[in-house]
Each structure stands twice: as C-alpha cells, then as structure tokens.
Image (tube, rainbow, N blue to C red; front, side, top):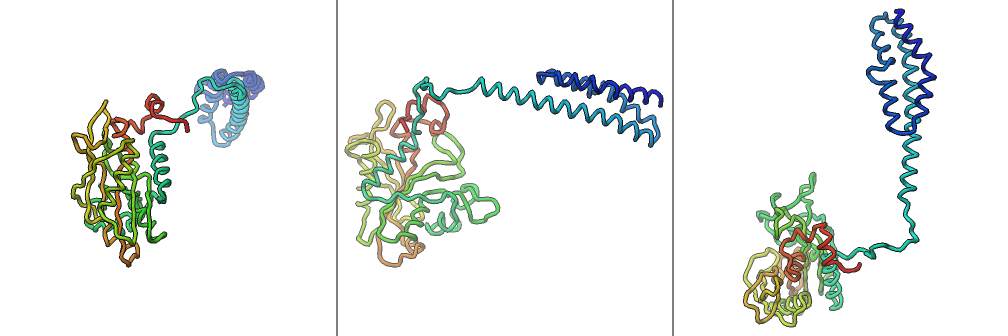
Length: 352
C-alpha cells in the first residue's frame, strides 16, 4: 500500500509540471508525443492504476479517485490545446489558399455544355418551332402508366424484375423503362388533338457494354388527331426530323414489321446510309440500311386506357438519343458519353 501511496502522491505533485508541458505544445506531432508520455501504456499514471488491484475495496476507491482526477485534468488540457492548434492550422490554411476574386481567370476556360444536353436542347428547339409541345414526365412511374395503359400484357418479359428496376417495398412502382408513359399523361391531361414529344432518362436492367447502358435518354413523339392520319404522315415526320438532326437534305426511310404492344401496326424504321470518315451519312444514295428506332400507329387499346372513346387517329415513334448522337458524331462506345475524360468533353463541348 505504501508503494501505491507514493506513486499517487508523485502523480499529484507532477501534475502542474505536466500541464505546463501540455500547454507548450504548438503542433499536433508534439501533442501526440506528450499524450503517449503522460497517458500511454507505460506512463506513471497507467502504472499507478495497475497497482490498485493489490488494495482492498475502500482504498482502491480512494486512490482510484485521486488518480482519475489527475488523468481527467491531463486529458482535458490535451484536448483544449489540440483544439487550439487545429484551429490555428485551419486559419493558416485558409489564409494560404485565399483566392483573389479580382484576378482574371488564368486559363480562360468557362466550362461547356455536355454533348447530350446540346442534342436535347437542339431537339427541343426544333419541335417547339414546329408547334409541338415538349412535355416532361416523372422518372418514377406506376405499372399503369408504364405498362397497363400502353397495352402491355401481364406476361410480357419487360414487366419482370430482370428487365425493370422496381422500387423496394412498392409492388407496382418502378423506374420508367420508356418515355412512352409520358404520352399517357398527356392524353389524360390535355385531350385531343395533340402534337408532342418527350425526352428524358429511362432505365432498364441492361449490362453495360459499347451500345447498352442501364440508364439512357429516349425521345418519344406522338401525334393524335380526329383527322385521319396514316403511315405516310409518320414517314414524313421521321424524314423531317432525321434530315434536321443529321444535317442532310434528303433521307430514305423504310419500315419493317415489328411488335410493340402500344402500336398496331408496329414497325422498326431504317435509313439508307453510307460511311464517311467513320461517321454515318444518311442519303438517298446510301449503300446500306441502318435501324434507327421503333414506330407505329397508336393501338386502340391505348386510347381506351386514356379515356378516349371518340374516333381518333395517331402515330408514335421513339429512339435513343445516345444512339443518334453516336451515329452522327462517329462515337463507337456509349460509355464515352458518360466519361469524365476531359479530352472528349472539350472536343464535343459548347459554351453553356
């Protein structure tokens, strides 16, 4: 017990010296050294605490309280000094990194508009100039808007979780797989006639490769009227847009039968093209055909789902925005469109 008494007395006697040692620390490194010296495993304080096991309960409590007072004083002092040093370091760093906002920009670069944003703005301006409504819609949809209203049967593979991202905890809430659901909102809210396009992100469980991404942008066009519309009107609309987007005077378009639940007849449309310097050039004289997207006459069941009981006519078409950008600019890998490679961003960027 005498050894413990002497050890505790020395702790209390040295406390003032130790506190002064702590206050002299002017760096985090010195604080760390002092902390290990005064509170580390081999420090006198820890040694004294280890000697308490030799005492009875009453003495252990008495000497333990005295040791803890010394320990708490040292810890509080170290914490205070460390806070002061850290605050000084922050202030020094702020002063050293201060930016003079009156200085001119050194590089002269002001950022740029992403290639996908460029394309979507051009498309929006084109359709608005022709009297179309450009309508946005929610990216999180219910099965009704994404599937049911678009005449998609319950057994269709697109409804399965291996194709579609469903929201956990909600059986029929999902990330939209197509912008076609926006046309349902439009017909329910705005009625007939309607001339509209919608653009935005869509989501599908596709493995990422050179031509696929689980998130991509889609363009959807819809025209509905009480005046008869035909496949000829659809073809004319497609030719106008492709001529505009690709900057060509004339385009040859052909249709191939295909199945889409929300159109009847459904078809895929191809354009005649040739390649020049790695880029696709659409023209009447092209030597090959290239698939661009899907289209068709709106299925009567879609009109019924939207509460339209009168006799109306309509056509719709859709294609991936990334795909037509890649075709126009000779980009071979869709992943480049989401790359942070500054060389690509600079090459395709325009001032915002």
